[in-house]
Image (cartoon, rainbow, N blue to C red; front, side, top):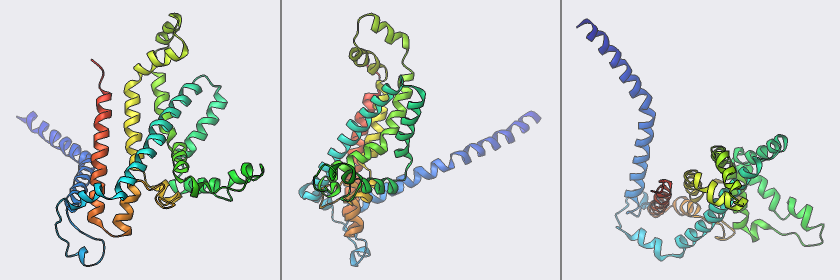
Length: 298
């Protein structure tokens, strides 16, 4: 009986420690559920940021969702986001990160350290600073024009105005490749050298060793990388907004910027909520696809 009385206080104290330790996670989960429910419920209203509709709003049913698919604004922004995500994340960051990870494995340590610092610099810089650097590089009086275009006898080109989407795509590749590089470096380190050497002895070419041996082994890492960078890029906002503001016109207006302009530019919070719910559903569908790819083939 005495031992039982000694154990119970010990169990009680550890349970409280466990609860306190999990409290931040519960609070974060509660906040996510609350704001998601808030956005979902108000997507069926005509709520506005200011004016009469900010107080006396009303339910409008699926009107906002019908507007999404029948107006060019949302569809144009969706197409821009798909292009930006595909070339910036899926093609750019993922492929470049894998090539850098594979190449730098056999590079001398000093050169490798220098390249890794250059790769990490973009990832560590704040988005506003990165936007300033790319603006100073691609503007009409920027580095590219002063060092390359003008000395060759051509007129200066304002790349941000004339090639807004390619500029933000390249800028995001530069900024986000570090994640893919780090993940693929760790993945390639886990590949057994004996397996690769055995394939080499069997006569496999370098391309065959990569395609038939290395890539199947690191397949879960590839799917994990694609999952994260697709979500991050599809909903990316700061660098694009700071660099182009979605312009000129709507050349670089992704869904995140379109939602921001509709919610806080024109003040249509109900319509903006519908855009956010649509983004959530699209990202959720993409996540399910990648999670299926994470499963080992039977």
